[in-house]
Length: 148
Image (tube, rainbow, N blue to C red):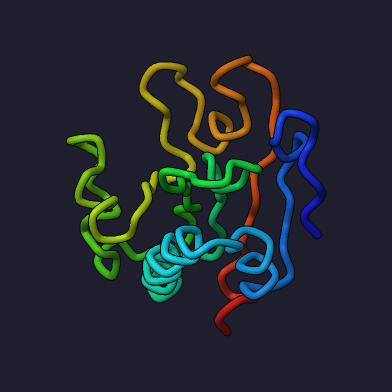
């Protein structure tokens, strides 16, 4: 279960899991704009699942109380992933990930790779509030549970 937002509109620190895509979409897809973002996210997640990805972590303003998030940020666990089966865009991290945003409406990063400035892995980086440096929560989606 995904807990309520705190007073800052963020999830409490930790990695929060969801039981299903429907639960996730119900919690974070309350507006037409958010449902549009979810459609792009789902398309990419299906592709990641087919390539062998088992877990992704969702971050960004999409998993906050923000009414109109710009996009979403996802880092995906590389364990078991066959890179030959991935959409090459998911490995293209240059140019501000514009191509990813155009096709999927969000950004994707390998979870175990280091974020450029902090040196933390993307999974660690995602759990830190950029504005304050404080810990914050993210959402884990287990793809095999969602689409098997």
